[in-house]
Length: 186
Image (tube, rainbow, N blue to C red; front, top):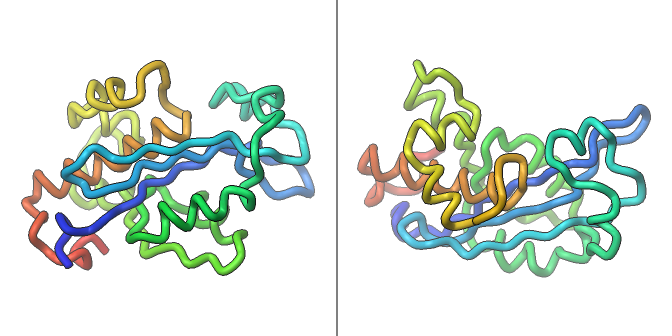
């Protein structure tokens, strides 16, 4: 199957912040799913947790405990995740956090992964930064992103997932990879 025929799912999590003696936990998930040449299907949700969001994490993403009040748990969203993430490769920028949070789910059938951080480091080794926001700005993708997801910004899980989706789409177009097999992205 070629890259242009492949359905991708970009995913991003925002987290509650690390506390001593307890692993970090996800509090927001965002996904942008579809073929890279099409407008992605978007999904996001806050996630219920059993501890407070740290002050440091709130400063980064602005999500507080009140916003999580009636949210589902990540496990409750599992059927939705299977529907969107089980269709093909996953995209994330610095995918370690996303892989770790998804690995906690039963069966964890998701993957293979495309890490846009790894790819952009290879394609643009002399870029001023490989942070997602910098890349989206320098590639001219931010206006499209802001139109796609108005009134949101960086460190919002949906905004960041859509940015990863657009960055990969840009790389595929710029490098003329659409008719190549998916494996070239590995």
